[in-house]
Image 1 (spheres, rainbow over the protein chains, first blue to last red):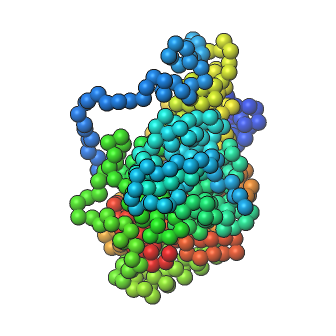
Image 2: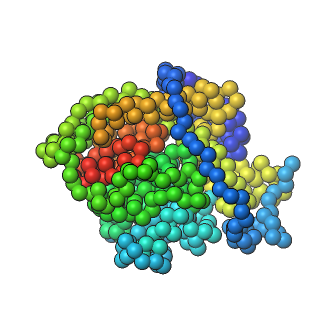
Image 3: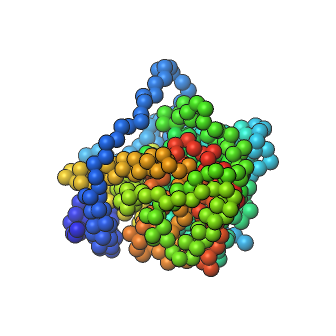
Length: 89
Length: 425
């Protein structure tokens, strides 16, 4: 399994993480090794699995939540009681 | 002597009275504490102060415990050494110059150094059991759903549980009893089935007469010689106390590390999308830039290298054209591990192995080769894939430091693994 630097750049853009050139170089080499190791999953047999799951329900009742002030407290920037983010283009 | 076990040392007094009266507890820094910063070992959350307590924190203070601080950890739980923390490495109090294991390394070190009576960690692929083994203390990874994850900052939700660390099995069992039980704020919590033993401290009676211990050869093959010798001595001790040891086979564990990393990285890539530098976390500081540029700049600056590596690989594994190849096959491998353990528990009461195939690494030894580091998790990740409970108990030492023995039980079989472990510590 080989990975080229273009693939690393593409996946970094999907994940919204900027990388510097040194990181791209290291990740390109490491991802090749790690993805090759993952190839062993091709040999896993099919297993009949019955999920041991049940739905968890509760009445839909209004409860106290965080106040607006509490919810905004950790935001780097706020304006008029809202989170302030960069432009959405 | 400071081992850098804590990121934040701040006292939260207990407001109730109960089984933990007078006991001090250290809390891993990915478990939310109202009004006390919770960094997850990450630069991006260096100033984050949660507005609410995790359920486990409320249960501790209700039970009379005093919280003494927030412990160091691999960033977002992603590591096996506590060296990926943005707040510097923690030194192993039981092995000078070596790592305490991870990712709950600060919690294990705090207990080993006597800086707290007890501690909480979280275990996604071994993050309670590995540091317990490396620091010579006891650690329990509960059955998935026994302990509430409300207020635990998510890394890989389908795998992780909060668990206790303590000097003895009985102490760990007491802490588990306080934090266990359903929580309306975590819909994945469940009550143990009716009739199953849930008096965990009472199960720490050391009585292994008639207990059948299965040992999977697959989990011994990779163990270092010194670790293997200590493990064998512990088995002999258990046999002398009346237990029976027999071989079992778990062929599925050969692909457990691969399955674990594909699933954990995929879940991480989704969970960590919330760190956008707008609602919390360091901002991207891109004046006039657009959302995506600002988001990407915030994450470049705020995340360390191991976190970037896992988020990127998880994004890759879930991306168009690769989902079936990686994620779907990893789910098949997970179902296979579950089935293997179920078959093993038809003939044995617990499954035993060395917790870690190696003794503690030297500080700095392992940072350069991520794949080599992932392989060290071979004996711990199958338990998370199968949603089972496991305990790591001190078994002895090699020249390089402490060795732990791991007992795995059937779902909600905490009492059985506590009993087995209490015969040793």
